Amino acid sequence: MDEATLRDVTKKTAAMLFHTVKGGAGYDLWKRFDKELARELSMFFAGKLYSRGVISQTQRELCAVAALTVLNRSDELRAHIHAALNVGAARREVSEVIMQQVTYGGMPVVVEALKIYAEVLKERGEPFPAEG
Image 1 (cartoon, rainbow, N blue to C red):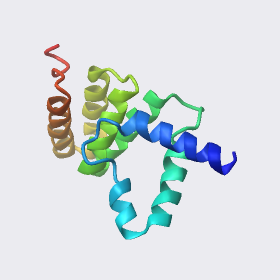
Image 2 (spheres, one colour):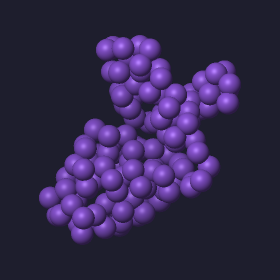
Image 3 (cartoon, rainbow, N blue to C red):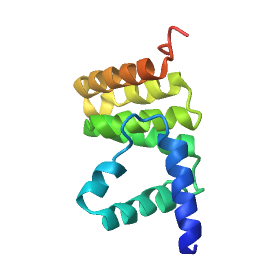
Image 4 (cartoon, helix red, strand yellow):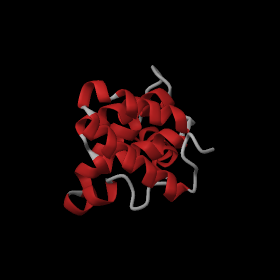
């Protein structure tokens, strides 16, 4: 893929995934430390990794939600819950993926992830899965 195409794919993928994330998904912070490295990281993640066609964007984001729940990475989890919803994951699918992580990370990380999910739903003006 040439540089211009990679830039275009990067911008489109990042916008599709993270357009609803207030404050962005990290790129603006990265740029404050190293603009060139931030650009390279963004082009790798959004332009290459997140745009691969092997699995769907919905599957990819549900995987991210699962992993970030178990790792207890709240800021990244918030961004990827937004992304999962932005690419068509059902609210109930997101909550189920989080709940399933009790086996791997325990109830404390599931409770924390559900709190973050509740905040995301509030930000988006969407109901809880069992309420709407």
